[in-house]
Length: 401
Image (cartoon, rainbow, N blue to C red; front, side):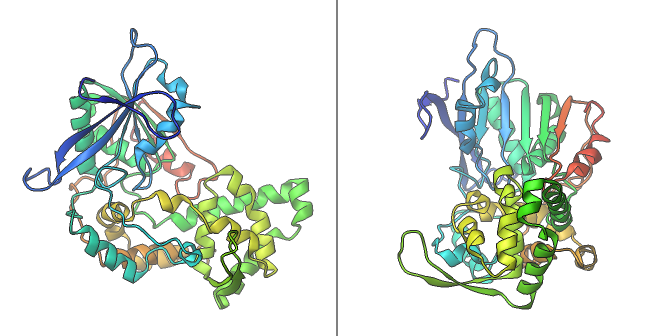
């Protein structure tokens, strides 16, 4: 820990430990550009009987792990009773050479398609001035993580991964099995998932459960007696013609005309199913939108959301190497035909990846990870990306899960 220095982070009262480990961007040649990995350690409260540390691996891909420091300093303090919590901004995220560029956050920005062609071209052109975009895959990043483990003097570690972080944890388990004490996986994204091939399926399943909950809840059913029809009708309306809505910002800076496309509307609804509070507002949003009132939708949509905390370049560098090349487009179209969420994500990401450099992955990358390390698997029943099915699948290969 002598390599770290006391530091303070916004919103956290206590002093933490911060540092930066420099690693080669190209771990094979080990020459040329380097990356400073941003590391934050929240120390264990009981230093005398301290156990192995917990390394938290962020989701996305593209989220910064150090953004979770506030959780471990506040409501997640229990994790630190006898363990250091180690947060590393994975290469391409946070303060570890983030693969992102500033975006002008106009109201229409929040309603634009996921990866506009001009944006992807500009993103690549800008980032290639300071990054080799083929060097930000999961396997490379997990060797970074092991460098940090060694740098901090830890022998064995506990891993906790959420969403994409579960893939990162699985890859680390395969590449450095002797260094892993236990693993906790929340919302499993296996190495063979082919994201976003099954996003629409998972989202449709989650939406069906949400609609059933509303129908079975007396208050929700009374307020929205035709919620299933509302959902079908608003999607049909937007499929025929995008909605054009006059929007007045809260700051009263002047009204603007906004366009809401079918794919964007459905994708927003999908992302809101990640959180219980936002999901609870979906019936009202759908009900009003089906009647031509997109006010509740816009109030939810215009403002910071999950995509704002993702480094787009890192997301593309990972998925354009590990997932999208293995999607059979004809299979995806058949799979998502008739699905309310459609083939939107597959189309958006496939088009973006056609303009993005493709990194290399190990020959066995997409094989299931085999391990007898103790693994605890959690799945959310209404997860719109990683349903319980994924956890059940990988458990077959993890003999001590």
